[in-house]
Length: 189
Image (cartoon, rainbow, N blue to C red; front, side, top):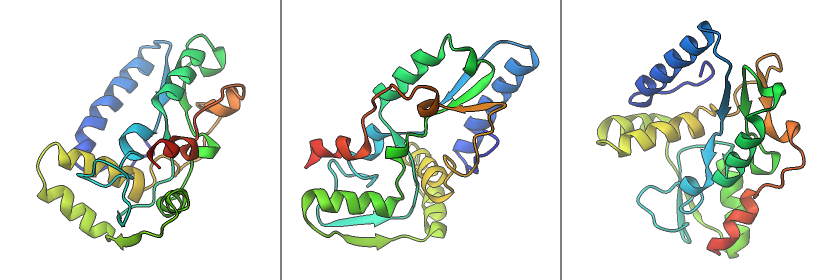
């Protein structure tokens, strides 16, 4: 929570989550927080193209350059493994799978290779993204604010995982075979 740079309306929501975390820790309640990052199910089916129902085949709007996405099933697997693992006790478990870390441009390039076609790339400056968040209504403003945090600010990868209070799932559980972004995109080709 301390390493994110969110804007409203997400900022107020995360502030509440942060207060709950501080209370849990102050009361000495044993805990493991799971930071699962972006869900592929929300991003890859449309390559984060708002209003789209499928990945683009002609043009893609790029207002971001985020780097991390995970499948919900994989997040669940890591969460279950962490429940009784003393290595995760009173720490935050981050799910940063190496095969799922892409810049947005790298993700578009991967998609282009899969469909055998070069997409027109339309770049939107980050200032315009912030303006768009202010101009649109709920729930679209929430989605844009999340995209801003993830893709513009890079809040999922802008810090080191300090082992005294943070751990990384794929390093703790190298036996877990996860769905890669590359594999997930195959279903849309």
